[in-house]
Amino acid sequence: MMEQQASTTGGRRLAIVFAVLFVLLSAFAFVWGGIVTAGVRERAVIADRQLRSTAWRMLCAASATGEWPKDLAQTATVACDVLPAGDGRWPASPDEACPGGLEPWNDAWMVVVSLDPKGVGAPRLSAGGKATGIGTLEAVNGWIEAFHQAHFAGKTAPTAP
Image 1 (cartoon, one colour):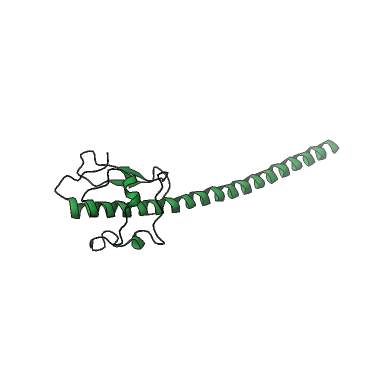
Image 2 (spheres, rainbow, N blue to C red):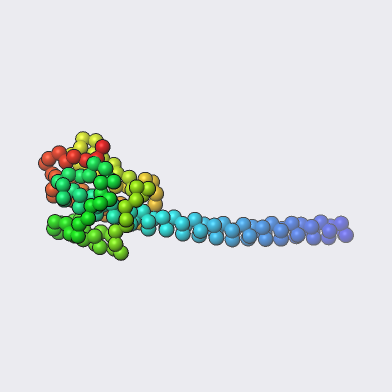
């Protein structure tokens, strides 16, 4: 009888140790997941601002020169306060493109430009596989595509190599 009681007590202790360990590991996983998610969200906000700032500068450069910039670094010094009317298809001002102001240009940005291999389509922006806000890529690429259709449709628009 004594032997059975000792084995039951040992089994309870083992079950309690496993339960406590499970709870601690679950709490750790929950906290770690929150930290990772917060970091991804923070980088997504940065990527959104970079994408919006780049799109605005590309639109300004295309408006001023009649062609898409050949290099994103060319957009670093581009400044314009308004674009030709687009009836809401692209932003009319830098504040509309990037609320809170444009980000200063930095060549280490996450922004990647993909070009039409035939050289007649609008360039496409992406964040190089990084997270972005919901709808940001669609919005900025929509601006560029609408501007391209309005200003370059039917003719070959030089684009970056």
